[in-house]
Length: 113
Length: 118
Image 1 (cartoon, one colour):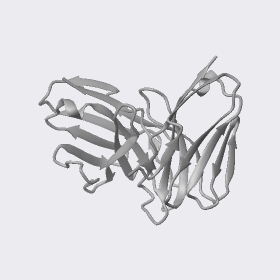
Image 2 (spheres, one colour; image 1 turned 30 degrees about the vertical axis):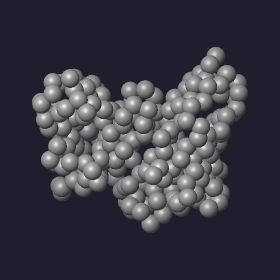
Image 3 (spheres, each protein chain N blue to C red; image 1 turned 30 degrees about the horizontal axis):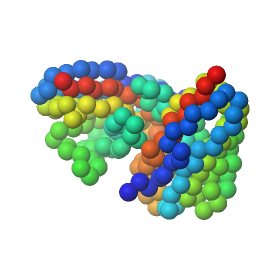
Image 4 (cartoon, helix red, strand yellow; image 1 turned 90 degrees about the horizontal axis):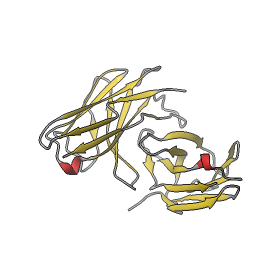
């Protein structure tokens, strides 16, 4: 059973388009993180959200944590080829060990020039 | 930001040999280090958690005698894949943390090690 469901799994868009990636669960998380991973490299942390309803912005990236802390979304505005990569959401279950990060399967984004 | 390195970045070995992978935190003391493996087109799966100076805690289904973990110092953890077989071929990633019991405790990931067992 996948605790964190990410959608879509694959996304291929043209430069300049907007996109949203979703991370959903039936479980409550005390925190949720978004990572970006390049092929052959480790994940790089983009953001951590901890409060229900929280919205964080990182340049053209907007992250939102659901009110019930069961879901999150990543929205990219005016995507660029440099945004290409694997986007992973990961969370710590409410009441779980802070060290136990549960990962989604990832969304592979390809932005074509 | 915190930097974590892994060595080697790639290793190819023959079936039956053992391979050691190092994970170092370069600019902070990591009381806890984590080892993950990632199969192609799959997400990261936690293998084990190690705390400096104590035995590692392995996730269900991970053989502790096959994947030996040592966390002898606050900046170094090693994963040894013993008697490697082709099914052990994978991308192994470590992360390091200096947990303070806070909700914002962060794991910093290494660049990964690609293991290919022939």
